Image (cartoon, rainbow, N blue to C red; front, side, top):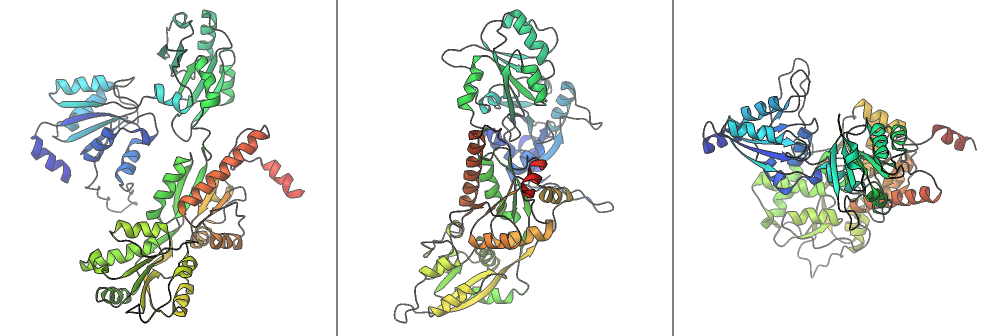
Length: 558
């Protein structure tokens, strides 16, 4: 690897460095700043859990590896990213012992590379970090420890349970196994139990026999800090039966003590408006990130399905001519109707070796805030954005008439998609302007998603879908079929709503204005209102996909 070679020459042929980094309890946002910095510098990442490689790729913006088809040549590794080495499981698929893991780490470090040993939770808390670090010392290798957020306190915190309060200051952490004398925990201090799912019945009986009240509050939280988190609250007397009824399974953290009662008012994570919702994001792959990030903030599980592919125009000559005209001062205005239009013009500038200085003396219009932000990222400022509706119509409403005395040039450069509306051009002509309406990029239908995703769309396994344009509606239906009637349909504006309805979809959520953030916020408001309605009716909080088929059939026959 290129990066590895440079490191080897800098650090010597036989000396490497190992950073034992805690990945935290599951939520990637809980990685520390130091952990992120080391992962960005790493030559080799020795993983522990199956999800670690994906976590690092997402953090570094690296593509997922492509498995070659039978008979194809292997796909070369990304030289800009680290090498991944499995430190959790052997070639036989069995978990490695602590000693075997240590050998993997030492072997990689002896290559003279910067090695990050990524470990679940914290490297020095219920982990093999001490043994592996001792192996580094024995091998004469340098190392550092980067603590990670531990599930011991993070999972209860995400469940809304503080481990200590002013009235409860003592905590005991117990890893459950054989030969534990539960009599020593008969007092009222808070207990945090690890690996207790299978033995909670025996544990609760032992604690009651030791003197704890059968009514002592208990909470069990599985896969904590992730959007799959689920918590059961009960008492020592009933926790075994309640955990079985809820189908609790490892990994889970159990808290015993009076602090559990505070969950009733402090539960913040599982009460997010879209918690656990599986939301379909049909967008171009390049633009889905912002939507998904905002959805995750509301507790949703976004799944990006590319429905539109952005490609260069079939004939680039028209675009080349327009860019030359821009440099030569042919235009008074340039109007950007999308982020993709900004990207297309910027790429053309880079192709010619031009920069933002070529816009000197040119007025710039943007169809909305997101497009204006893309222009700003280029070091430019939009002179005109819609004061009302963020759309071509809104832009046209604020566009000034051509004035022969004030405007030396009457021509507008309009780089746009091949499927853009002609209304903006017609409106500008009516205002006295001449338009060079140039195809800057093409939007084409993407390839269909995998069969499991298509099945999930049609059978209602998604809780919601967010449509950011009419084309995403048309293309999703074209490549994957119509979403199930139980799926909540959220759209970015009236035009998209009309297209959705034309395709037989019921629109449930309409953004207050055509903006991605507004769209996600509106869906969150819908989810919050739905949650409150269910609670007011005394019903359990369920997701739209958790429907009862019999109830839906009954509604249809009424």
